[in-house]
Amino acid sequence: MIRTIFTSVICIFMFAATAQVVDPSKQAGSKIQPDNLYPRVKFETSMGDIVIELNRRKAPLTVNSFLDYVKRGEYDNTIFHRLIPDYIIQGGGYSPDFKEKETKDPILNESGNGLKNDWYSIAMARQNDPHSALRQFFFNLDDNDNLDPGRNWGYTVFGSAVSGTEVLDAMSKVETEYRPLIRFQDVPKEDIVLVKATILAEQ
Image (tube, rainbow, N blue to C red):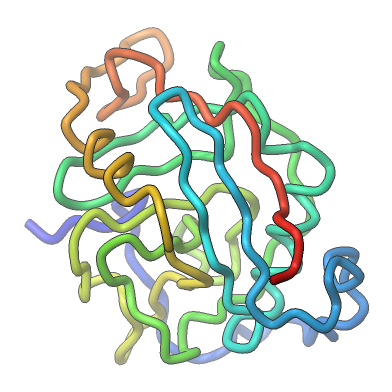
């Protein structure tokens, strides 16, 4: 059985008729280190620190949106709510009591940018609509080429972990369970919390 994020059917790999062209320079996040094509973000988690290098050159819309969420503290005190060992760990959308966080407008799918869903890369989660990514992201815990675009839309990779990969390895070993009250599968038994996300100074 092929596993996909949200177990959704991926739409045809072409821009949907309803998709709107967005100028990256008009996004709120475009003003954050505007001349830096590879900004870095530090995740302080309950299991250790991870540093992510983003790729604004290949995924400007996604990176700008992500940076805006980070700057506004929107990822602080959120949980990694979905873990499939040797596949993905997903977070960014819920508080520890599983209240859904507020979102901005959806992001146009940039999965055709040449970046792959390789081990330790970070990508955007979405639903059936290829342009439905909001704020949730996932780390790839393996080389997941089934999430890359081909004839169908893929999942937008916008960076990768450059340190703290051992933290991701440790996360992948946490036991999971089904939570019947919220009807969530693959939930870590012990909370994995993203305590704070910080944009690092330019190098």
